[in-house]
Image (cartoon, rainbow over all chains, first blue to last red; front, side, top):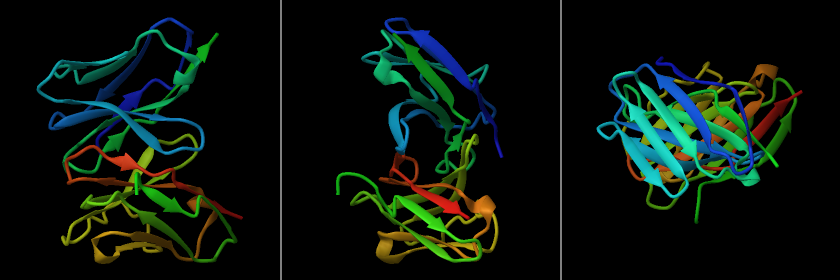
Length: 111
Length: 113
């Protein structure tokens, strides 16, 4: 299957910005997604971007897409301790419905 | 309901036993997915249902795994003769249609002893 790669860990101080990066290989992906998973919970959809866009902003979240480099990033402004979680990047892949997920980036926000 | 509901939330079973996991999708969502999340791994696609179409079973890891969706709503994932490597969190998701964002349940944590 197609690969989605993310760094495994990120640690930031409360109030700083966090940037989580993701690379993917399937150039046919129509949508790219960011999900958040807190301990013991399922995946919560944070935001998504259509492949013909290069940026999407939603309150503290900014998604940047570089389609040429197949690079997606999620920036969280003014990171709070409640943002500590695992963040998954996903792309819609060949099928257009079955999402391919990265292994997740564990974000730790320290006071 | 307000979200995707899965039951049980936790299941401990002995190796060799069969288990059934249940998923109740968001009302009106025609697409339903099962994923598996193993420790340290990403999410592994298992099976996809869309309306009355034949399901995409390409992700099922072995013939011990099967799933059905009755009446286009509730789905059950059945694992026969469970093995220790089946221990994982099984996540169900639904979407309004096949290309919409997926909405996940909280999962069933399966432990095979």
